[in-house]
Amino acid sequence: MRKIKKIATKILIVVIPVLIVVMTLQNVASSLLGKKTIGNFTNELLVSYAEKQKADINDFLDKVGYTAETEANVIANNYENMTEEGIEQTLVAVTNSDESFLGSGVWFEPDVYKNNEFFGPYAYTSGGNMVITYDYSNSEYNYFAQEYYTKSKTSSKPVFTDPYFDSTSGLVMMSCSAPMIKDGKFLGCVTVDVVLGEIQEKVSAAVVGTSGRVILLTGKGVYIGAPDAKKVTDQLNITADSNPSLASAGSKILASKEGHTTYEDDGTHNLFWTTSDILGWKVAVTLPLAETNAPIKELGNTSIILTVISTILISLAVILSIRGTTARLKRLMGFSEALAEYDFSIPELEPTSSDEVGEVTKSVNKMYSANKSVVSSIIGQAKIVDETSENLSSVSKTLAEEFKNIQDYVSSINEAMSNTAASLEEVSASAEEVDSSVAVLAGNAKESKRMADDISERATKIEKESEYSYSNAI
Image (cartoon, rainbow, N blue to C red):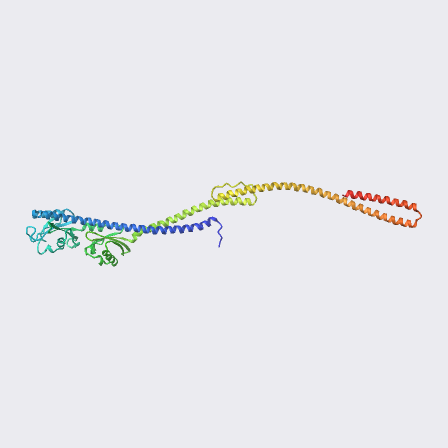
């Protein structure tokens, strides 16, 4: 494996992977948190939208109920003094009071209004004109047996019939009936027939987000409003929907007042619902899960892009920082190499920072100053040693000359000693000659004494010469 030499490469190898891991973990955490936050926000938005739709429906129903109740109270308190025309005008006024009101009727108990067994005028609009009819005031129709009448007879408040689709008009309608009570006696009821077109238009036009929709159901699950109008005209129950996943979700809607579920329809859809307190109608809001997750995906993509950009910027910052540091280290290395070559002529390094490299630079400068002083001292001492060496060399030469002189003296001494030995041999030979002469010339004593004195004198002379030579040699 190739050994990495550059410190910048080593740092990047450590920093970049760690940075990528940290940023990845941060992105994962951000995505999870974002998913949870956006999911909660979306859910709250859908629930809020469903609640708003429910509030609008309740307001509409309250308006209808209040109108029917007010009409019932007016007629109940004044019917004895009201003519048929007066009652008819009241019905017309109510019908004209709101575009959603299709018609209004009053239905008395037998023999209450002028002893009539059936008295049930009905006012409605037809082709933009107001029409009064008594077609329902007879035994054939027998309004006493109708749902709106029987419900009013057992209630003290306005009651509503289930919505129904009128194939003749092509409209979804419902009736609100309010009992006419005076002095605790049930006198009959009034009805206000309502076209649910306004509600249907709101439901059909409602768009949540980009592709979210609103569904309105009766308490029994029959479609009142939906993006698919055919489901309304067919009076389809959601539990019998052709989409089994939606039908299953419909069962959950009918089983609880509010909640959340999902169903499949070209992808997964979130579905939140709530229930009207007045009629028990179900208001459901749907939103494709893909649309819910779109901001989360966008957040993830944005995080990835930011991670890449951040990694690049941080890497560049690290590289620039490392380059600055390595540049200072290279200056320090060059300075150290010069010191290793004993080049003390270079100036001290100027610290360019207060970080670790700056502190090392100060320490190297201190070492440089200390070594320079030591080397300068050594150089000074070396000069002294050199001068001393020269002096010693001169002395050595002198000593060599003196030793040569001594050697010459010793040679002279040796020569003198040789001469002395020769003289001694000569003396010894003379003595032998003397002895021989003494033996031969015993009688010539005077001559022998003279010769002995001569020998003694010569020996004394030789001795003095030897002593002189010895002294000079020393």
